[in-house]
Image (cartoon, rainbow, N blue to C red; front, side, top):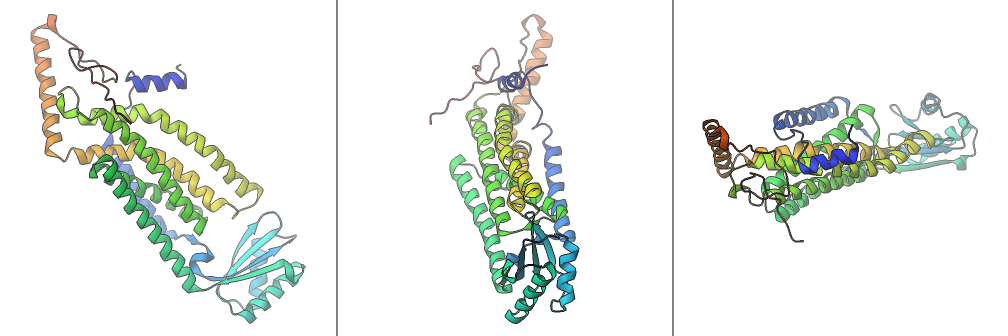
Length: 362
């Protein structure tokens, strides 16, 4: 059984290869299904938006002996001053956070005193705050604007850097997939979505973009003169690039997931739900989705878009004709048959029929 290092070397040299691009229809179809499922989950289950988005009043009760959510909800309901159900979250090991609809100053003071009396703590241990609906709407708008601006900058950056709109569009669709996966998980688990979650979204999008750029940079290196030869297609070079960068993507993801996973566990178990969970869960799920999308979505989409061009279709036809002609020649003259070796880097095109690894100067 080969070691991880041997496996990585085999992928880079071309001795071992996974058919990512040949199965691109499957991966792109799965990505489309994930997008649909993500939107359906949000539409049906909704997101558990924090008070910063919805507006309302919040009470933090410290040094409590009973963190039961039902007790806190019943205490607020018994006051008869709050309309609708309250949202209760345990914070740490001895605190409770209660969020209600917007209350005026007088009602807020009465509810604060009622909570202090019910929990048997000093009124100073109950901290109250209020966020108006207009402020919550403003935060929601700013969060949406930040995502749109980020996407626009990504499209501009990718187009200028790679001089290819196809790479920009492929990267953007991969980022949309990452958002759909992360938002879908938040909808299923009903984890609170806060401004910190939005920061987590932007962070994972940056991480996913970095991983995609690494793969596309290798694609650009290998396909710089792809149309000058008739041994391998654009799709086959992209598949080689994906396999060569696969180990790097996995290693980078594992290293990044270890501290994020530690934060997630500490936040949800040691400190209690609601503490650091919003941003750490977004990072954890998003990094996994970003690694997957850079390999199995962005690259297959790039090939799909590239094959829409006449140049690529004509080149693919020329490669197919060359192979068919070579096969016919080999059958007619078995003694002179030349076997086409698997695609590998680091060899010159010639009698060996191997692609030359392109050298780029930084």
